[in-house]
Image (cartoon, rainbow over all chains, first blue to last red; front, side, top):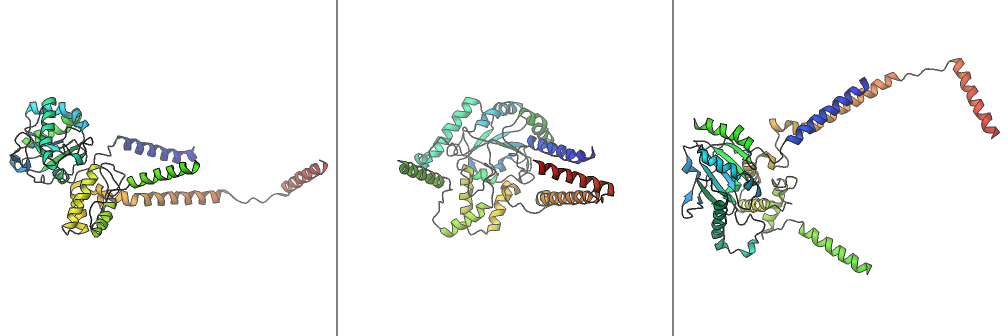
Length: 194
Length: 158
């Protein structure tokens, strides 16, 4: 009996460790930006391309920054939740439209003249929002993905919760699930809004 | 015919190999060399088991471009590493720094090895003790002799 006890214990420990490993999400890399000020930027707005949006404009408010693109399949998955979230008016939701044209694998960038990219971005992003509903207070256009790099974006969609002082308090990578919304995102917004 | 087939196969594999390498973009060889050295130390976050140097992901292209700009701006390797880590975290480095949260990562395998080695030594020593030399008694000697003799004579008969 004793002979088999230790190998058995070893086996059980291994199974438990592997089991826990299966439930972890390797995409969920902890962001070093949590607890730091949201990186500054100034980008044109989707529905008012001559005006700029900057995170500074949101100081004093708890707000959400949601990174999206029309080519992003998972964004379609979370979109109904965002529309619902916007109806509650719990916090303004700002969209960061990420590499709308050059991020789309179906587009050959060699055939897109540089001066036409912005127009295409506005047209495609606008069309997608009118088709699926627009939950955003406004959307900023990160045409070349440069702001995305400052925010450590590596998989769209991503969502940041930013507090009144402009500090990033949470990052959610991947589509928002109903569970994540009700168990972490909404309670955090409530707490930060106090 | 076989020769042609071989040539086609060789040619085919050659071009795939070529396509598998990340495209160098800039002209300055010194910049490219540093870019390669830095990006080999960085993980591509889209395809997590590839380095930034070897990845084809769109984001990897963007980040290589970003690093190239930083190099041309005259930033040091450490500054560029810091740039990446401050955005993507320690996970972006293939050789994470030694600190509280990475202790298990750095010393876990060595610790497991030492534990295993200690276990093995203990087991071997215990087994050593369990096996004791028991000299044969006179009676056992006789029986062994008889068995051997019996065996010999049987072999002789056949």
